[in-house]
Structure formats: C-alpha cells, structure tokens
Image 1: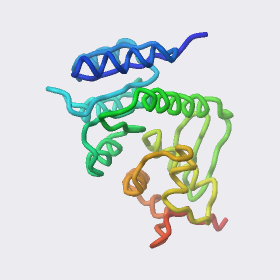
Image 2: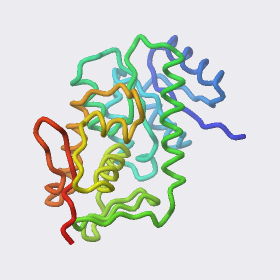
Image 3: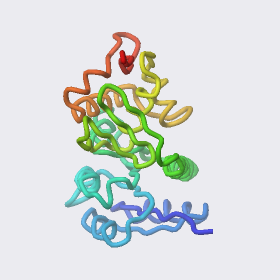
Length: 232
C-alpha cells in the first residue's frame, strides 16, 4: 500500500526530527526542510499529500508559504497544518485566513500530531470519493463537490478547502440555522479544537469571494449562520 507523503517545514531541527520520526512510525513518508524557501521549492517539485508548516520561519515565513501555495493551481488543494508556539486567537485566525486547514500549538504531543495528520488526510480522501456529478444549485451559486469547484452565474470562485466545505454544508441545508460549533463539527468532525472566531473569519472570506451572492449567507445574531432558503 502506498502511504501519503508529509512535508515538514520547521526551522528547529529537533522538532522536525521528532515529527518526522513519529509520522514515519505511523506509516507515512516524510520530507523535511528548515526554511520556507526550501519548502516552496520542494512543493513545486514533489507536491506532497500534506504540509506541516511552522509559522515563525526565518526569511520566508509560514504565512507567506501558505499564501503562495493557495495562489498556485498545482498546490492550492494540498492541506496545510500550521505549527506555532503562539496561542492567541489572532495568530490562529491569520493562519486560517491564508488557507491553512488546521493548527497545532507547541509544545505538542507526538500522538496529537499523528492524529491530526490522519484526520486531515482522511477528510481529503473522503472529499475525493464524492460522486463527480454531485452538484448543488442555489441563488445562482453552483457547487460541484466532485470537482471541488464553485461558480456564481458561470464564473469560477476560488475558495479554500475549508471555505468550500462550509459553503457546501450551508447550501445543503437552506433555511436551517447552525451554530458555529455545529458548523465546526459538520466540516471538521467532533471535538475539533478551533475557536468560534475562526468560523466568523471563514464566513467573512466566503461572502467576500462570492460578492453579491454572499448576501445569501445570513448571520442570525446570538445563534449562528444560515443559507437563505431558495424561493424558486
């Protein structure tokens, strides 16, 4: 069986080796580099299945690496797990805003690292297994789950993986109101350690990218969000 490859971009060699050792022990292939520049070069050359990315790198930092990944058609669908010593909401939110899928704060348990990698990769595999013609059409928004694409009146909208999942979830249940925690559970699974503030950031990003169509995602004060019911 071919196991997935994880690229680790971490400037602290001891941490890089610790992560690599535990992931290899769990059956994954690993590649490790200590700078953002090396990480981007290897990404373009090999295109791994997942990237573990330290945010505080010398030179080209993790935010810039993630931003460039998500702007590249060949790399934008590769999931990113951030590694950071910072625990403030603002740091997590900033990472999610540039397209990261998950985050782990230092110090961490090797078991947590393996579990997060396994969860993210399983979710990506499940997405790829969706039926090709599985589409949702609502308010002029077309969501193609098989191709992982969104169109507004025929114009392609570039969403991150998490933004796509949130939009698909809300559009699949028009008229229903969901709390932030329900949205997290629906797209990330039970007991996923992400702040409710990060959901607000993702919704804001979706609305901005959808333009006028984003008005169909409604904030229900004190509760959460919903997609307007289609009146047609």
